[in-house]
Image (cartoon, rainbow, N blue to C red; front, side):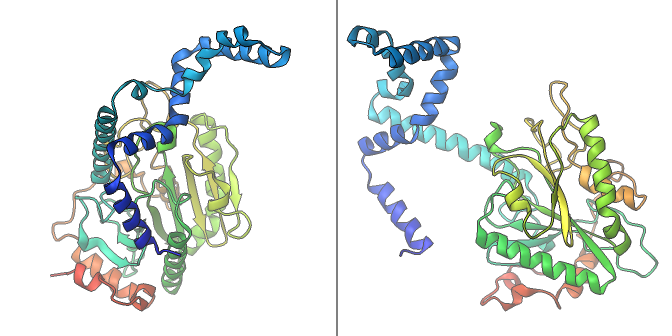
Length: 375
């Protein structure tokens, strides 16, 4: 059995050795279903007429003349590429790849919390696993809590996959395993501080919905007082009911228990959703009005925004609900300037709290020491 690295090398070598004719053939085969769907959309009502004729012929036993009337059905699997040369097919394929690369670059740039983004600030990288990273939320983007004097009110952060993924539902099992390890260690760290944790994920845009590439997935970690964590199910159930009424979200709220009913088996891959979780359970709500426009804030925030007059699920819903439980202002009213020293003090304090629970130190050759420098 080949390793993943060996498999990727073999695939790349095979692609390099393919002739233009072979590339053209592969392009046609891979796109047959896509071509079929696109041609049906072009035909509109004409497709329904052909479908009715085909159904009648199959029941009555059509002869050769009858089948001539339905010959157009075979064209549904033909694209414009069938009418051009193999070299032109290859050129079109390359153009599509370039367009896809440009789209990915656009959304990569907006995902400032992701290590692949040119806007990523390595000073905020707290821990680095083999598949997942832990990134501290800059102080000007985090929820401002009214903590007791002398108590640590920091710790808000993101769990972020290293490879691109538009949601945590779509992660591979080995990536999800590391996510669970981070969640477990984070809970232990805050438990010693006398605090609880609420996990949030809002996916308002997916490639399945026709929106193209989406932002890099992130799971928001919000430390809260233990009393707030205990009351979270009641508050979020009420808040989600209000959202369903106000924003036209009619899908049922799914209750999770971290055993039989989990986020991973409750939501189909490729669907937008909102997730909130705490120790022992959580809720997930499918989002019906998928985001089609740009995320202009570039941080998944921006609150209540939509296009064409249609209502969109508020992207700050989760963090605003948590803030409301602690009498904090909504995030859109908490806009602040970045710290002048790059949050150096906050980062050092977080690292000091985290070091006793950092499971990534067990990994051989952990590169974090070479990547992060607090000078």
